[in-house]
Structures are given as C-alpha cells and as structure tokens.
Amino acid sequence: MSTAFTTGKELQKMDPVFGQLSFNDHEQIVFCNDKDTGLKAIIGIHNSVMGPALGGTRMYNYATEWEALNDVLRLSRGMTYKAAITGLNLGGGKAVIIGDPKTQKTPELMRKFGEFVHSLSGRYITAEDMGMETSDMDIVRDVTPYVTGISESRGGSGNPSPITAYGVYLGMKAAAKQQYGSDVLSGKKVLVQGIGHVGETLVDYLTKEGAIVTIADINEERLAEVGAKYNAEIYRGDDLYSADVDIYAPCAMGATLNDATVHKIKAKVIAGAANNQLADENVHGKILQERGIVYAPDFLINAGGIINVYAELEHYGKEEIMRKTENIYNTTLEIFDFAIANKMTTHKAALTIAQNRIDQRKLENSKK
Ligand code: NAD
Image (cartoon, rainbow, N blue to C red; front, side):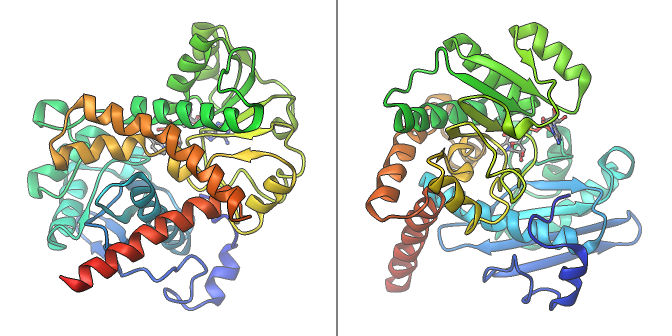
C-alpha cells in the first residue's frame, strides 16, 4: 500500500500518532484489537463538524502497522473534504482492517468489527471500501445501525460504483470544457488506468460519447474482457504516463501523480476516480498547474459513491442521487473559476471552499 510521501523508516522516526505527517488535527483514532477473531483495525475520525464521520472500511495486507495508520489518517481526512465540497451533512472518517481479505476475513471478524463501530455510538458510520463486499456490510448491520452500503434487499442503496463513475465522467467533461472550451469528449483520446468497478463503467460512458479509449490494468483477464466489450485499445507500451493522450483517468490506486510522473504526462486533462491521486498535494498539484494541465480534484469528482450511501441515511431515492451527482459538473467548473481568481491550484481551491464551509458550520454550531 502506498504511503505516498513517507517511507516506513521515516514513519518510524516520528511520534506514532500526533507526529505523523498525515496527522491533520484528527479528532479521534481508535485502535481495535480482538485476539479471538484476529481483528486488528484502526478507525480514524478526522472531523465531525458537518455531521457524523462517514467513510468506508478498507481491508488490506499492510506491510506494517505504520502503513495502516498512515492510510487511515490520509483517507479519513479526504472524506471530510469530500463530504464538505459535495454539500453533505457528514464529517470524515475511515477504517482500515489489517489483513488479507481473501484469507483472513471471516464473519466473526466482521461482526467484531461491527461491535467496535457500534461502541462509537454513531460518531463513525462505516461503508465498503477495498477488500469489502456488500455482504460484509450486511454482517456489520447485524450488530450496529451505523453502517451504509448494505444490500438493497435490506434497505441499502446497493453498489455505489456506477454512480461514482457517472460523477467522474461529468467531472471529466467539466475539465475538458475548461481546457478545450467544449465538454464534448467525442474524438478525445482518453486513457483509463484501472478498469475495475468504476473504470469499466467510465469506459462505457466514454465509448458511448465517441471518445477514443485506451485501457490499462494489471489484470490481463479484465483487459481482454473490457477491451473486447467496448472495442477499446489496450495499452501495451512500457511507460503509461507518457502515453500520447488528451485525458488521463486514474481509476486504480492513489499517488500516481508523483515526482516520477508529473513532468512527463502528455495529457492536458486529468480526471479519475482514484483517491489521493496527488502524492504530495502541495508539490504535484502546482507542477500540473504550471504545465497547463487541468486537474479535476479527485475527492470532488469521485463523490458519487458517498452521495449514494448518504441516501440510506437521509432516505432519498435514485432521482435525488442522480441530481446531486449531476451537480458535480457545476461544482467542478466553479472550483476552476475559484482557482483562477485566487491564483491557486484546483486541488487547493476545492480544499479551501470545503474548509470555509466547515469553518462556517463550526461558527453556527457554536452559536446554538
Ligand atoms: P476495483 O478494485 O474494482 O478496481 C481497481 C482496478 O485497478 C482493478 O481492475 C485492478 O486490477 C486495477 N489496478 C490495481 N493496481 C493497478 C495498477 N498498478 N495499474 C493498473 N491497474 C491497476 O476498484 P474501484 O471500486 O473501481 O475503485 C477504483 C478507484 O476509485 C480506487 O482508488 C477507489 O478507492 C476509488 N473510488 C472508488 C469508489 C467506488 O464507488 N467504487 C468511490 C470513490 C473512489
């Protein structure tokens, strides 16, 4: 798992929690341990000013506990800003379970994890992330109401990925409008890196609009399947980041915009689903800006998933989910304008607007 800008050794030199580079005034970090089931989990509550901290649970075979801690700190912070920029009354949280989901995930372990979530009395609400399935959330639901992303038969909103892909598609169109003066993607060369749940649906939207799609993945089977289904070209070069494309859509892992890649990217638009695409948001966002590349902030355009699970809490239906997701297009354009007006990167602009909303709400809350 990427630690993005710190190595394991560097992490160990720092104070374990408050001294972490990724520590950003998080409100609460909860370490969950259960010997019987082998559960080792960390729940990170970054900020709860706007509402309960909502964010998925990731199960991953982290090389070290430091990596797991770093991941939960970064991911939970991202959720705070994602909810705030999308206008949802939610705070930011996330959980990680240390272990291989293929071999170490059991119903007993998930149940125990649910009990820990329940012990926080709703300050943290969980959902799916990597290594988790809807059926796991159903187990968590047996022991706590503080879970979303449960199966539709139990009143859940189902798989969020198609909605996420729709939001990413609209964010990409907004970014194309900003760069090229038109949001029409027909004829544009788009590279989609990662054709999993979100990436494949994005390929579908792009193909239907007439974009020239190239796909990349580490899974050869998926490449063959998705390539044939959408008649998409499969990337076979040895340096994906210098591919001759107009738009790069990172839809696999985070931190692909880093020292080794930002200088050679030929695409003039970057818009994708992956979380935390900028390895260092203060450094790499600036380089992209200087190179004239329009970067659509990841936490804004991949918010379809959270809009979808928020529906479970607020009891709104598909129509409202789609309306809120469609709004990503306008918000993305507003952020580009704000970035230009305030001479800052698009990522910083989105963070600033989100932080302003949080500060405003904090003020209102203090007056109650
Ligand atoms: P997924 O696991 O279904 O798909 C990821 C795909 O990326 C897989 O096909 C995998 O083989 C591929 N991949 C992994 N490493 C790769 C590499 N080094 N190079 C190329 N391909 C690689 O995940 P997903 O649900 O489609 O999510 C994709 C990204 O979007 C993740 O970063 C996720 O955190 C983010 N995201 C997803 C949602 C959602 O609703 N699913 C919401 C917000 C953000």
